[in-house]
Image (cartoon, rainbow, N blue to C red; front, side, top):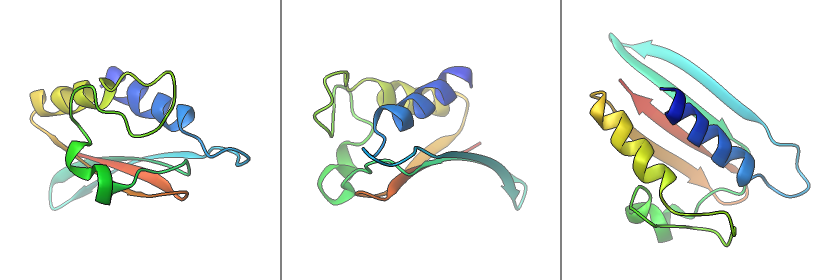
Length: 103
């Protein structure tokens, strides 16, 4: 769990919107005995129409950040699934991104 949170929080910081104070919101909740965790940010967002099908692929990057390796979300997805969960993403360019983990 520590590695999952570290990667998603680090990405939120790395892909912050220039000129905007970064905000990261983490919440957990249950619906019908199903547990969820959401990590949201107000960063640069991801164009899901263009990159959505590649989101959790190995060596896939979506911005021109020189630090991007394209492995973090791939590893995160595998870690979540190994624990019996699933991960999804919603994002709007220039608004932010939310990763939702279902346990």
